[in-house]
Length: 144
Image (cartoon, rainbow, N blue to C red; front, side, top):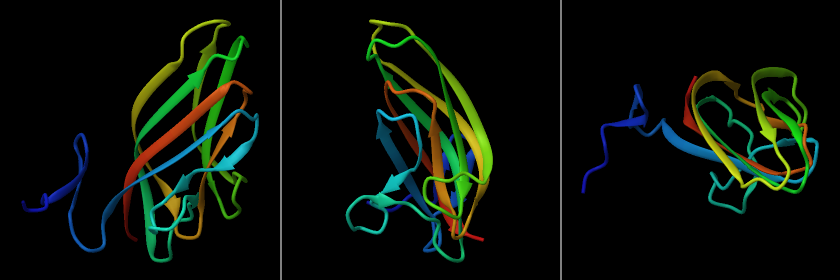
């Protein structure tokens, strides 16, 4: 079996070479907080993901999940980058999910193109709810 010539999602494609790879970051929480997305990208245990030197991360898909813990209202989810894990210096994306008491879990997948995560920066998410929630971001890690 040969490797595909391109990597990407939808119409966003890159040549599959030694300097380009697809990476998925994720985080789940029950806190109203700002946290770094995590990855096992380096092959080690899951840890806060920081864009490596000489690279940039381009987000192509965001998947959000939210579980019901009895609350109601709007959960505002914001994503951005920062030089510190769990601190957003530049907000680049925002989405709102409505919470209804005793409802089933919600999952939504959103195609995006966010070419805003430079080397040395963390990909951080800010949650406004204490319901159970999670985020997965799939994108391309490539040379600058």
